[in-house]
Length: 282
Image (tube, rainbow, N blue to C red; front, side):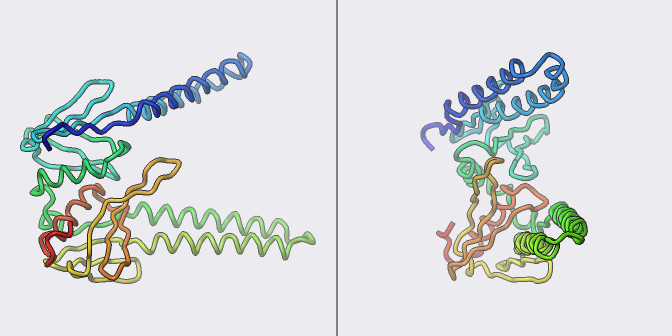
């Protein structure tokens, strides 16, 4: 890395965000009476806080050199030498870099273009931070499963209430069946999504044990062609996940672990590189 690598959002994204925010403020100020505008003040304050958080994320920047990583925002910049990173932590898609004295943290924004490359460079600079011995077992929290069951019970209640409310009408059989059918289809789709993602990962030498809700699968390192950090784009931004690309051209998707997803990705990538017979895959 002879030249500094700069990762930032385009100015166009900032301009669009500012225009949208100004438009919303103008709509509240001029599209409502004084009383209604005053009653909407709490929502406006909440919206400004959300806008501020999004603006900080969009306006942030990461600069990588051979010696250090630098994050910049409206509040200033932080730099940390690669050799000064003592440990890593994080939740979700975030990863925090802590120095040995625990008095400074550097956190690159997951919303930046090229975030996957930032994570890969971090892993190449400090592979010792992502040892499979330290992270031999990684589990999902109970949050996703609890959320799924809560939504499922809510939709079941709504479907049954709708069915009971129209039982006495002539449209009861058809409309009731449609409501129940919609619930069953949604439940089947949601269950397939939740139960197809491993609940825990265990690394044992050259074996990766994937435990699901109702089953278990063991993969050898040589059965995995590569480990990738991928994402899907949604209205809520990038949704990252780990993709295990298998030699039989199938793939396994991993997300929602109890630890930071970038940490889990780099641990799996290092484990695969160390235990696969083809050291050049990753």
